[in-house]
Image (cartoon, rainbow, N blue to C red; front, top):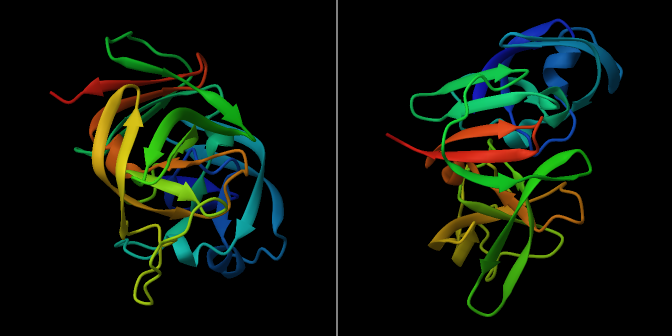
Length: 228
């Protein structure tokens, strides 16, 4: 999910991704704009939301940029979304950020658990040999249904041509993913690096795109509405 935004005066296309606890600026773009520091306090503008001063980081995002038609300026993280209500639909691609929800629609409600600044939900994944339940980050910028924390999983057998950490592809399959009593078999999967060690993995864009999504950081829930 890519949206127009401005961070530290750098306007461009940003990934919006709650699995990132901190908002990031792509190192290449920051250097082009004359920023040498890796830790900044900067203004953020996205949709109708304005934040005057927020700690942000400059990071190498080359691994997250492949596959997009436009250069990625950075990542809008969960710190920007704190206290907000985010309505999201992948098809057609629409994002709305507001301080409160104007409507209460019926849907499947999952409680959020905050871990290290990252909103997560409970889920389970199985590879036939073993099952693992735990907390999975809400990930809107990775291909696949599910990605497992690379601290606890590996792609086996390893294949030289495949990078299980590539965020724009899901080269593996898990026997099953279970979220809120719904079962997804032969789930497209990959690995994810840099997550909090307490997290089992993340739920990727292919999962969230099946629904209209409301991430309500004020109430501490994510609501999934069937597509009409």
